[in-house]
Image (cartoon, rainbow, N blue to C red; front, top):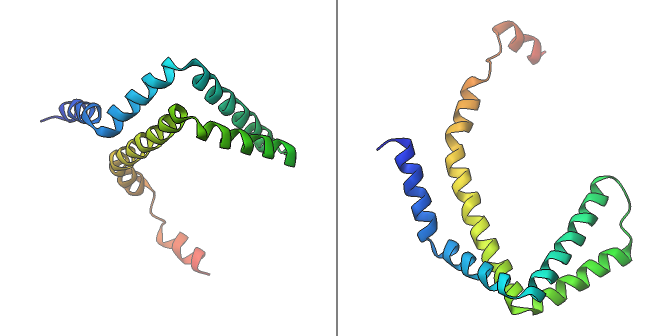
Length: 127
């Protein structure tokens, strides 16, 4: 079996996984509930804006943090959103694990590809 065959087998395995199926069903349920979808979209937009503000070095006021925290508490009460977020999380953990496994050979190549210091460099670094 070549690497492409394994990639297609992995794709089929992902589609057959409970994480994928549950996430897909939760996404379909979210798509059907426009109020829940809008609520989640607004929350993520506000979350993104605050994150960008923090990254740009701007201060986040306690009121802004409290508004986001309150919004989080409210959206968690919506069962459609709650189910979506839980299944999204489980699916993303699975994908991150797969990515880590797939990335292992790349790490090995990166380590092998690093230049070894010459004996002179090793001596000067040890001083």
